[in-house]
Every structure is written in C-alpha cells, then in structure tokens.
Image (tube, rainbow, N blue to C red; front, side):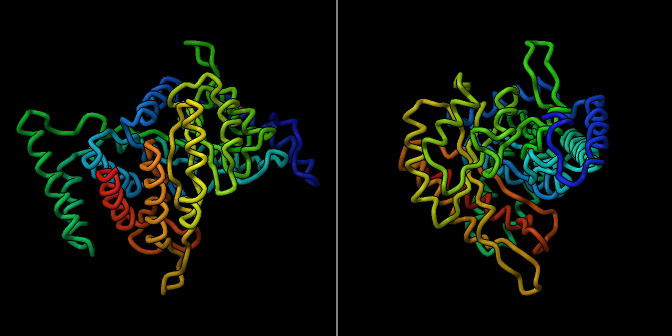
Amino acid sequence: MTATDPIEPGAPSNALALRRAVADLEGRPPLVFPDECDRLRDRLAAVVRGEAFTLLGGGRAPTGEVLTTLLRMAVVLTYAGSVPVVKVAGTAGAEGPNGLPDSYAPDAERLRRTYHASAAALNLLRGLTAGLHTDLRRTHRALEDFAARSPARVRHRRLTRDIGAAIRFMEAAGATGDAPGTGEFFAGHAAHPTAYESALTRVDERGGRAYALSGHLLWIGEGTRGPDDARVEFAAGIGNPLGVVLGPAATADEALALIDRLDPEHVPGRLTFLIRMGAAAVRDRLPELVAKVAASGAPVGWVCDPMHGGTGGAPSGAGTRRLADVLDEVGGFFEVHRALGTHPGGVRLELSGAPGPNAGDPLLSPDQALELAFALAELYRGR
C-alpha cells in the first residue's frame, strides 16, 4: 500500500496529509536493525527445536514495571525449564492503528504518533536492559517478596529457594553479575496498515532483503490473515520473523496455506503461530491443527495467547482478567503439545505495571503475571 491507495470515504483531504506523513516516516531513522531481526529469528529457531521458550509481553505501552515483570518471569521460567527464554516486549501501544483495515487509511497524525511512541518505548527498552535491571540477585529478592505474599507461598518458596541456590552456585563458580542473555529483549507488535510499515521498510545492504524496521517481530491478527489481505502480502516480502494469530475457527488447511505463503522455504524461526482459542476450545480445536502442521514438517513455533477470554469485573468496577481462565487455557495448550510430543513454545501476555485491576481492556497485574510464571514453571517441569 502507498499513500495513494484507497483512503477513508468522505475524507479526501486526508490523502495529502497521509502522503506527507508517509514521506516524513520514510525519511526518519529505522527503529530497529536487520541484524537484530536476524538474531531474533535465530533465537526463535531454538524455540522451534524445543531448546528455548518465548515470552511475549505487552500492554498499552511498555513501562519499566512491565519490563521488570517480564524479566522476573523469565528468570523463573529459565530455571524451571533449563532453557533460555526469548523475551519480546510489545512496543506499539495504544497509538498504533493496527485495528483498521488497509482499505481505510490511518489518520496521518496517528502515524506520526505511532512512530514517536514506538521510538520512546524502544529507547526505554534499550536503556533498562543496559542498566542494573538485569541483576539476578535483585530479581531473586523480588521473587522472594512475591512468594511470601502469594496464596501458594509454600510451593513458590520452594522454587525461589532453588533459584537462590543456583545463583549462589553461579557466583561461587565465578559467573557473577548478570546471567548471559538475561538482559536481551526484542520488540514486536501487531502489523499496522501497510502505509506505516512500508514507510519504515529498508533494504538490508548485506543481502538485498527488505526488512520492516518498525519492530523485530511483526504479527498478523485473526481478522487480517486472509490470503488476499494486504498485511499477508506485505509480510511475505520482508525478512523479519513473523507471527500469525489463529483463533478457534482456524483450520489446518488455513495454517498450511499461511506457511506456504509466509515461509515457503521452511526457515526455522521465521514463523510463529499465536494460538488464541479460549479455555473452552483449546483442547478440542488445537490438536488437529498441531498434528497436521507437524506432519507437514514445517518448522513453526507455537505460542499460547490466552488473554482474550476470561474478562470480568472487580468489585471496584474496574476490568480484570480471570486468572483461573488464563491458567486453564495455558494448561490446555501444554496438554495438547504434551500428548502430541510437540513443543509448547511460549506464551503471549498483556501486562500492566499497576498493582491492582485495570480499567478498560484488562491487563495482568505484576502479581498475576508472576503467579502465571510459577504455574508455567510447574507445567514446563511436568511436560
């Protein structure tokens, strides 16, 4: 899509503003770099092989609290699974126009705000991971504090004691400070209308491949993954790792067609399916999908996205997630993969830095997220 493609009916004056906004973005620096995208693809290839786990977390926009929560979750999962955790932070936030179809041009000023919000988020991401926020002892103390106030404190304290012992062993062996890879974060978001993504696409001098440099990982939503959708066509031509959301109505034939379109060369780490089926359907709908994709030999990653069901209200009237429903869906996801002998490759969560329930679209609080991390640790150990 270009700035001259169809725009919102009744708003012809938007065409000139949109062309100017796209031209402005085309002249701005990229937000990420091709070699970083390739490094993420390599990390996700390890997930496909069953040698790593993906933790994809976001919300309205990343904050220091959200990134710290992701790091604490990653430490729990790394210890429990004895595998690296690939951390991807959502950076597009509420400014992103990713809910609009490509037949409707996004507002020109929103395109600019999306760029600036994403740039600020990435600056925060890089700054925090370069600082002291990856110190393992500090993270361990925070996990101990959480375990002490959790209703499941007996089980959680056992795991936190084990983590502490592992940290002390590392220090005794001379591996002080940060664990290798602890502070490595990548950035991802749901693909925006291609006017925005195309404006930030650059050709890599190393091999002549185009990359969308608005983020390392781009994923395509359930409503925009049709074979003729502009986002699918755009994604097929870029070198980034890609994700595709598959809901309860997705069929194995659709999944295989998406593989043929987006990863015809079967490159490990190129394609991840984000499974969004709900606790009630995941055990019934997912097995056939996983079995047929596995039988095809396609090296895709599987990530559970349990955040779009189980929504309720707190006594205060604020929205919240029913953690039991989230846990049930994740548990079903693991059960399916365990039964089929495939790898439950990760989870995608929407997080908040706030300690309590969140108004609007509900997000997991830090304590809810850590409860989920400890539950995942038990599932991973029992796989």
